[in-house]
Structures are given as structure tokens and as C-alpha cells.
Length: 399
Ligand SMILES: Cc1ncc(COP(=O)(O)O)c(C=O)c1O
Image (cartoon, rainbow, N blue to C red; front, side, top):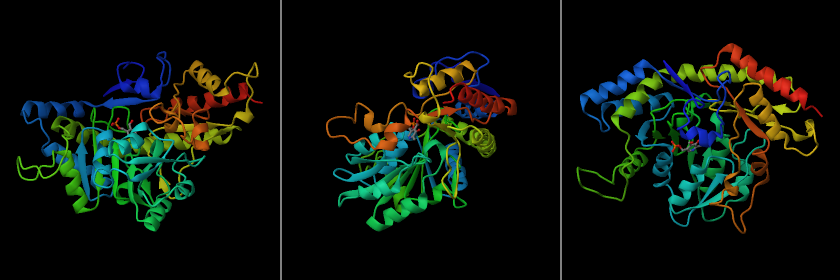
């Protein structure tokens, strides 16, 4: 098994998106990318066959992934951003308004703009960090066409409330599950809900294909539209019935995906077990909060975001940023952390500007949350060290 951490792969996007500074050898990494000999053999097998374009491995991967997610159809594609475009394209377009959380990765919102539609930024719940459905309800207008809700950090949004809002106003729903492979809600895989669910298989995600993505759907007509959009609107060979793209996944990626998928259920269980131990450790630390899992849901724990109460701590000189002090102190204890995200989407230069509203909870979270390691390759001792470091740092800065 080849395991690489963000620290020894400075070239990967994760360094940028996770804000992770290079760390020492003893540091417990935030992310662990595992490639097994089986993954490598699977990729080599496709290379040796010479059949590189989407083929039997992609199809087998799509079927296995959709089945495990309780969805009828899986459509693999080039990455999670394409997956959003493929899901959004058939459901809304120019002039439509789409409700989206202000606290998510940029792509959930930016691909709404790419579809020609208007993102309407909503606030998030202060404990689950997912779409606040009451705030979303207040922002519905006659132009609202859809809800794009993220299952952030692996934790499903309140799907019952999302569906109720959609039913009330006749809206479509796309769930961005880039971080939530194999998460469940009310005992079913998250693929059972909404019009479409999208995934990413970027290396830092819970499983990878290198770059890759998937859309799952349950409706045959929608499946056909996503398929057409994925491949230049092609029906019969070289007969193009609509405008589309080439967002297909290669069979090399499909083979890696299928092989990785074989370990995903165990990896998810390991993440959940690690999270349960972190929950128990944090329950004893005043001023720190474990992430709240949505009632009825099982999180895939892509990330474990700890929330810090500013009032519970003091800084040595009274005016330094306690959030940054926590990050620095955790690093000194040998624990890699990162802030997902350093700013709300409404604060991104591409969206911010005159008249932009900044929903208050989303706006605060960048100074309250920090992610600690929860990945499947942590040893028991390492999980213990994360909890001990949190307790030690909290005691050092206690008000
Ligand atoms: C919530 C969310 N949506 C969408 C994406 C985009 O996925 P990709 O990087 O595969 O294009 C990501 C990946 O970082 C993500 O975390």
C-alpha cells in the first residue's frame, strides 16, 4: 500500500485547498491518500489492454457505486465540478434562481453561474454547518427553480426539510455529495434522495480515481439528459441532438475507482469510529464543540470540523486571533489542521461586491472552525494524540 500525505505531495491541489503548511515527519497528517497494489494493477491492466476510453471498468464502477448509494443510475465523469454541471444543466438555466449555502466549496455555487442561473446565498445551521432550511425558505421567489444543497464534510443536510421546501414550491434538488460518499439518511444511501447527487473522486476525497466525479440519478429521462450532456449530445454515433461537452471518465480512472471502491465501506467505518472517539474527547473540553450530525443521518466524515467558542478562551496579549493561536498550537503538538474554508463563498472576490449580503453564521465559521485528522489510516494512538492535543491547547488558553 502506498500512502502519501499532503505533506509529502506538495504538488497536489490539497495543499492549496487545505491550506496545509508543510509539516514535520512526526506530524499526524490531515489527509491520507491510499493507493494499493490492486489499484495500480487495475490501472496497468487497462493500459496494457490499449482500451483507454470509457468502457467496461467505468460501467462496472458506475453500477457498483450507484447500487451502494441506493441510486438507480450512476454516470461517471471527469471530476466533481463537471458532475455539478451535468446535474445542473438539465434542471435549470438562464434567469432561474437557485438556493445554495454560503458555506460550501466554491464549485457548488460557481457552477450555478456556469449554467447561466443566479445563486441565491442562504445561511447554514451553526451546528451542522449545512443549509439552514428556514433561511432558504425566506429567500424563495417566483424565479426560484432549484435547491443546490451540500452534504458538507460528509454530513447529509436535513433531507426531509429540503424535500418539504422543494415540494412546497415545485423545486428541483441537487445534492453536492463531493465529500459524502456512502453517507446515509433515514437508513438509506443518499443516492435515494433528490433529483441528482454529485460526487468528487479527487485524491484528497474519501476515495479517488485521480481526478473523477459521478452523478447519480433515479429518473430515466434525467439519466439520458445527463448522459447526452456528458458526451456532446450524441445519440447515435456522430448524431448530435443537443449541445454537450466531453466530460467522460477514462477506463484507467474507472478501473482505479472500482478497485478503490472495494475498500470504501471499511474506510468509511474507520472514519466513523475515529470520529466517535474524537466526539468523546471533545465532550470533556469546555469551549470546543464536535460537529453535529444531522438527525437521522450517518456522516461519511470526510472532514472533522471542530468549532471553537471565542468567549471560552483568552489570548496571551488580549488581542491576537485565538483561532490562529489554536492552529499554531496544534501544529506545535504535531497535529496537522486546516480551515475549510478561509472565507464564505459570498466573501470570495468573484462573488463579493456592492449589495452582496453575507449570511451571518456562514460569515463567522471561517474564524470558528478548524479540521483535525479523522482519516481511515490513523492508528488508535494517533486518534488519542489528536484528542490529547485539543485538551492541552484548550487548557493553555482557557479564559
Ligand atoms: C463540496 C464540493 N463540491 C464540489 C467539489 C469539486 O470537485 P472536483 O475538485 O472533483 O472538481 C469539491 C471538491 O473539492 C467539493 O468539496
